[in-house]
Image (cartoon, rainbow, N blue to C red; front, side, top):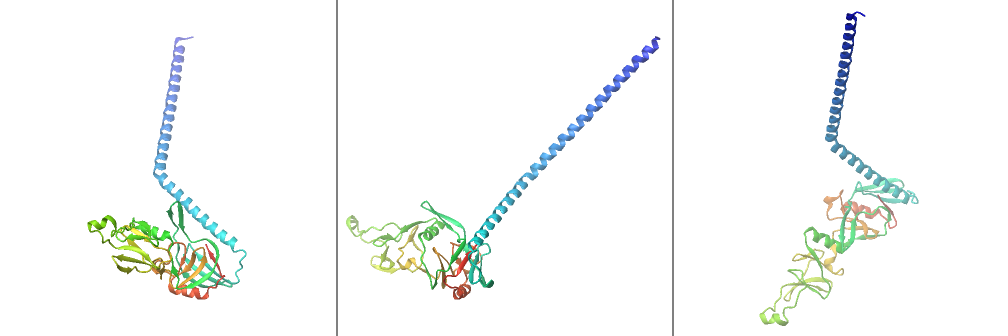
Length: 307
């Protein structure tokens, strides 16, 4: 074989090898570019997730909360529907919507009266291991009594709630007991014993029960305390006995009260500016004109639906 033929063959193999090497390098370059593009895409995805993650989480939480609220309302409506299955709408029914703070009266399937009201505020008050929930009861009740010029005899929790608003304490005043009017502590008789040796016979004013009222006795100068007013002695709110005038509040419930049982009722209010808000301790409040009209048309035995 001529030598030049062998030379050409070797040259051809070299060219072929160089071509394959260049193709391989080009392929590797393309792969590296693809990897870099994928890395950049992943980084961009991470940045987007970081920027939108918080907002998306908030939106998910909001949606979950709204779903729970809707489910709770649907549950209330279903409960009321079950309770009223045996109550055909042929007579008079008083309906209270706690969500709207509205009251309606229906007769024979027609709404004959409606008014803005206030219902329970839904707050809680823990006292000695017991928790009071100030909410309007949901369900079917009945009018059990009607009362004109009602007086409110506040439970102990009223005084405790008022005291906590101002960071104060509460003390009970019982018959036969005296409290120092300046401190709320049990009063001592300084006219007796060793106090008399140091001229301490005259003590300060004391609070005590006298018959059906509470008086302030300042060394024989006796003054009756106002009826239905909060009594404060030093840093303490005084809880008076139930049978005293100071425990009976007039005007707080307006001129009329429709009793629903278990301490709940529909009545007037001395805070008409708060009507339409959920601010009561569980009762339904109406303005003077509205409660007067409702009192006229309501009957003992009427069904009351609250939802």
